[in-house]
Amino acid sequence: MIKLRRSAFLKSAALAVCTAGLLVACGGGSDGGGGADDNVWSVGTEPAFPPFESVGEDGELEGFDIDLMTAIGERAGKTVEFDSLPFDGLIPALQGASIDAAISGMTITEERQATVDFSDPYFKAGLAIAVAEGNTEIATLDDLEGQRIAVQIGTTGAETANGVPDATVSTFDSAPLALQELANGNVDAVVNDAPATLDAIATGNIPGITVVGELLTEEFYGIAMPQGSENVEAVNTALAELIEDGTYAEIYRKWFDAEPPEL
Ligand code: GLN
Image (spheres, rainbow, N blue to C red):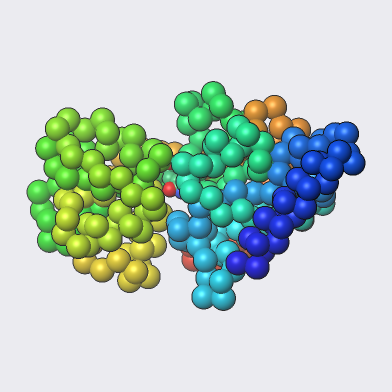
């Protein structure tokens, strides 16, 4: 939390300097976004998506994405400052270059690639359907026809649910809120990233739900950056190094208690 306030402070400080006309080249320095300090990467994330990003008991951000991005920054000689934003606000923030990057379990999609640049893939995921324990009627996407589905706004899960004929889709700001709606019995299913749903079940955060059937999709997460960002190469180089030297595997084991798959 302190970190967030500090980054907000840095931004307003930078703005004050710009307004005073003391600097000619304002607007985030040569890295094309974020703070005025070239050694800092301002990185947006929506921190309600464990185990990728969440707010820990100490009020600090934690998760796979947080550790990975911090390590990437270290490798690239940058200090990473996280900025908590709504998931559907990340791409607009990149387009407006108010952040340098976003790491938020974000799937690399063609549609998003039209507006932002992505790093190389850093995580393999996929969508899964969650239902209430004991529901034997839903096993596939076809079974969702005419059902009530909860999703997180602006996600690939939302897009998939919106394509289901006659379904009533309700959108929530975060995945845990959508899953809670299912646990409360107000919807029949949730379409969400499997690793996030499985984590919610495993940690007992959302009781009484289960994942059904096969994964609906194969998706790869990428770190999003403003289009044409000069940081794409540095991020990719650092990521490749971390995969090569075992740091990536170490972070993966910490959060998933398993060996990482080939990307
Ligand atoms: N991977 C999904 C997407 O990119 C969900 C991400 C999220 O909820 N943080 O849309």
